Image (tube, rainbow, N blue to C red; front, side, top):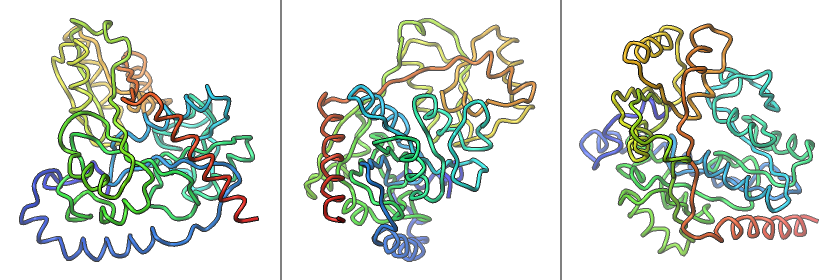
Length: 344
């Protein structure tokens, strides 16, 4: 179930709706846990870091994956991104080409990732990893795929949004968890909590009892001063649009109108024209997210125009512990060396 279809009761305290679906959630969770615990189908001879989350939908995986890759590149490594390509139409393992592909082909997140380094989209994670190795990558960063058993991972960093946490704590369809939290914690090497809200407190307590390292980070607007006093019309089709609108306000912009769309929303020509006209009528700036901007890559007239006139609030990830990235990469490298030696 995609997050744009997620019912509101997932994000509050468990109620009768969650309880009514609990038997289905138990069966779903049992099957999903069995699959996750399967032995990996195969491996590659380079370190594999998986950036995942416990729930359906977004929690900050893509900004985290980008941040890790930037650190790895500064350290002299050649990272490559592996993505399922949610929302894209390609059915085979594909090397993302920014000159050739759009969001309808490969999804919006791979377009963002490919702006930084080599990116492969593949439902078969093992096949995708092998293609990245063929491209010369010596570190693979998976954007999602934590619950997928196909590829052997060396380090699993699970991202949790501090505001939403794990919702009502139930597995799908009674709640947002992809499978029971205790089972997922067994496979996690560390937890990254993004933000300062209390929504992740229950996860932090469970992770601490399981002796899992817990990192803290926050998403900060880049060039914050440029937004001060600007009157804007903001739109976003991400997992939690309100978070984006809040970030704009925190950067000093006056959000005159906030227009939320479903996660991974595919904008129509009519919607694009309406947004353009709305901004022109009010003589205001249009602002969106980098993911939404990537989704506007098109040959259609109004989508192209919307892309041209839309500004992006660029954000960066700041870790509370400066050495966290180095620790994650070094532990992944050490784990991969041990894995490769044991296999031989």
